[in-house]
Length: 319
Image 1: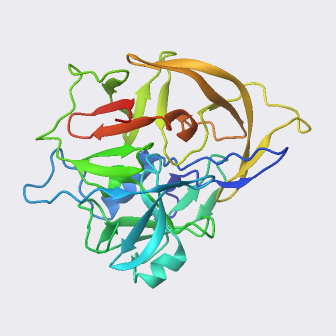
Image 2 (image 1 turned 90 degrees about the vertical axis):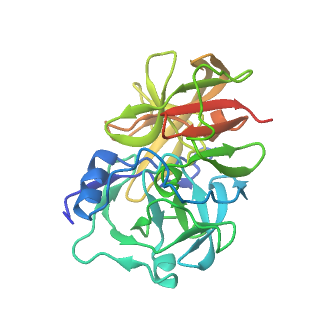
Image 3 (image 1 turned 45 degrees about the horizontal axis):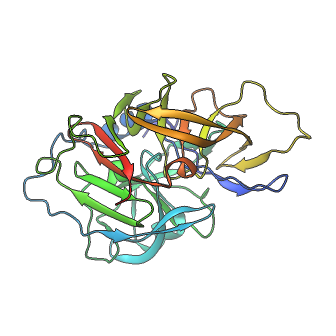
């Protein structure tokens, strides 16, 4: 593996400054991840689910402030470990403790470097698990089992689960108010832009730099990452960073930190869905290629459905 390969991940640990703590989630730079996957012999993501694969059973999760949507996870039948369901991660990330306890196979040679929103790089390792299971040790996921091992996670968080990587080509639903993660076969139950949900929208799953992460187009014309690993609302680059003495929050990632400040809520639209009064966070000190984010403070009222086969995303109120 090329040691200079860079996986841009915002594994952000909260440190409150000025009385308001904000945590953000993970965002991998997948143009580099793709090269790493090819070097390791992984095939590109298939366009349809395997013929004989069985849908995993639905699982429940709990939301913890500053940590996200947490689900019980088993690696190689060892666990349970506490993972955050993070649609912005780009690849599943585990702690060294989990890697050791689950006897994860670690790739020989130099590992990749990872960086947070700040762009500060730190070393990591690449590995592979035999199985990843959710809810119980028999509820195996069908997707890739390649992992990144990083010591940059908070001590009370064992890993980040990237559903776009770990679920293969199955569709999945994250019902945030209902606290449930479930799965569907997009060949049998596809999303369709011709069938719009009441008070919601089905929109195109946008490609962004070759990434499989879920981006959508806002009414502003910007592409935004739907990031369940972030507790921000609408997170955007701050063109006028606040002075050091102003009321901001420092958000620490694996190697550095960025600053956020809450500004007046905004109203944006995603297709036919209008999001009114979205909490808006201005981010300063982030890497130049950091994306616009829609985090949990914007997504919390909704049920999110992701169809990787037809490249569609449904955002609708929870039933």
